[in-house]
Image (cartoon, rainbow, N blue to C red):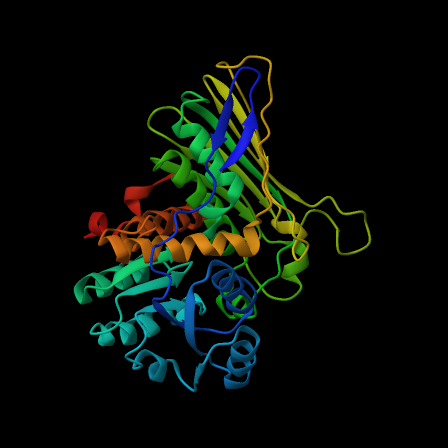
Length: 378
């Protein structure tokens, strides 16, 4: 809990994840890139979780990450790791175009594997994601998705403020990202830049805070800097989500930010804002300062305490601390025999929303989510 001092009372803002009682569940890790080495495993060690094995396309990388994080087992292939009867939970951090292949192998080992945490995006598109969900459901394996922005501390605190009614009915929300991400090598072969890599965080965050929109209108153009390296369409992305109750949510995902790498002064940030009938919340995301540990922030004001800004603060940061939450919610679900907070079937709606953005940008029109789902097309 983070405490904000009110003029007349003290309010506790909840921003930390619920932790499992049993942290000894054996976790097998597939992938040894940045997100696994610098985020997942750092967070798991900090939380006291139990990663016991790793496998990767590069055995040398897997060995280096294992040594760094004291993992007792290194396997030459992920197939060998999955066959290890000690492993109950699999943490998959591989490119999206190989996730379905890996998941087909995972479900063959449902005798000892009980849960999977899949990296986002969960496959190449909604159709592949749906196959992954159905494979796990048929095998009786609990599937969660690593939509880790839901566990950024400012976003969870904002959700708590919304749930407590301090903002009233949400009217308008926005995210403004001016940042230059570190692109992954596999993005070049897929021709993706922003929508399935960065915007998916923001689209999922809007769903987490407000539920599912009816439709989305998106407009994109290439990022001039990245276009010098490989062809793409989804560089700079603008989109508006329309909700049945009148709420509008919009994001500007600008990975160009002007010639910030070409000599001008940088103006890098991620800011968000939620306006409600009874209050206003605004925040910053500390991620663009990585590897500097910069906590995200939340400020809010409400008619329940007029004339006051409340500013709860914390020491935790999105990268890597949010990755405690994504694994914790899966372990809690297994422990309590329930559906994870970020379960695979729910994440299909985020995948559909991303696909809707691509279709909208291509056809220059608003796209309803039910245009994307396989069920509606059948």
